Length: 477
Length: 103
Image (cartoon, rainbow over all chains, first blue to last red; front, top):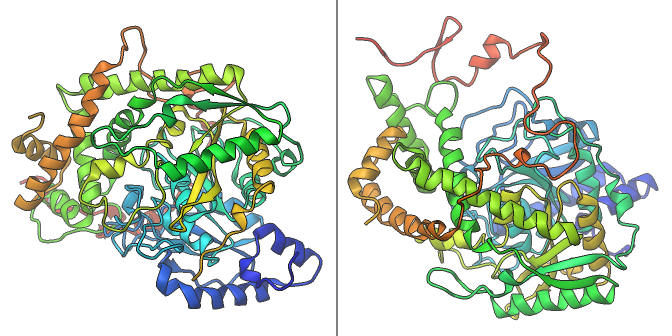
């Protein structure tokens, strides 16, 4: 291990190794991290708030939509500005039991509605590689904190790519586990049939380590599955000779049709090179087809907004959060509270979701979307009958500039075109760094596996990572 | 046009969100373009397909527990009343307090 590296720049498992060898202690790590944060946070703005910790432990950053007992948890919204959860989310309980402390809560798009972190009610987070660019979203604060070495590792949540796309934009590793793998108890719900919590880390080993800690059955989440959790660190030891990898042709033929931005040439080349590298490592790569890919974004923005409109009905000024007091009756209080408390993207999504569920439109939009969702899920089932994993770009472009897509919600939605399908199909997917554009912005490679085969993801991702140097690159801050 | 300003106003009312004129104008245009994009779902052949509301509906794995699993219905500690009310904007005698509902 290079001794000249400051502690804050090391990975979680490197630090745990040093602690075990008594070469460093928690106090030294916290001090190094605090100096780093003082030096760069003003430029990055990754955190919504920091935590005053009385306990000692390995620090981790947590997205501001995961409940922490006694700490404000706001989803970067005005409506929950003063909300203090009376309990810990299951993932927080698991982390605390494993010796972690929460260093702070990271900025995000309000209620996880967005792909750029610009929809935060507080402030936008900047991409550590270029402050004029977005870090991606909605877990943009978590990705930026890890990329800027302000956090060793972080948790995010992923409903349509909200862990993987910011991981790709910031050059870190981001995993969306299988639906049902990690308990969502205490995650403030966005779209309940899609949401999953997952780690954002500096490398694949750290991702495997954290996934082992947060995974497993939880009676408090009715969608949590009682299936054995693999030993994910162990899965890194295997090579990938003979592994069958599918490359879906639809993801590479994405053209700039109408609103849809095409696949960026530099991203395409980087992913092609990554595929060549996987071949060199012994994987068998062939072209496959996911024929219903073109419908994924449309299905998503019906299903996700419908569920969001229902989940966000609870923010009505009665049980918690903001209440506008000028109203003289209950209905007026609801309306004024929700007008003042929600940002524009939350309002748009709630209105769209209410519309597709409303009488006369329900069949045409919502039920049809659920049927097409079944077709998209079936595409994956078919491919995984013959293949171990699927490899694609994580995002069609590198990080875009602040403000570029803010006035055009549809353009923003389309930046999730490659990540949405994994949520619709419930399968696990990981983004790992696989290149850098001429402008110096990171590019991400997405690997998708069948349900509950996180071992395969980690195995392929780790073998690729160890054969390349992309994960070692750091932004100049 | 798929969605009119009147429609947006009506739906906002259903969703209990008050909109000002500026928001109404902005959202109507933006929702129109999103709905236009969504129209492409009409092309998909779903004639023999069952709607999938939940990913655990389908069986990709051999597992005794699929779909929603409810925890055992046994008595256990719940959030104490005072703690449950702690985040409430207004409470009275152990209840959430709201503006007058009945005239």
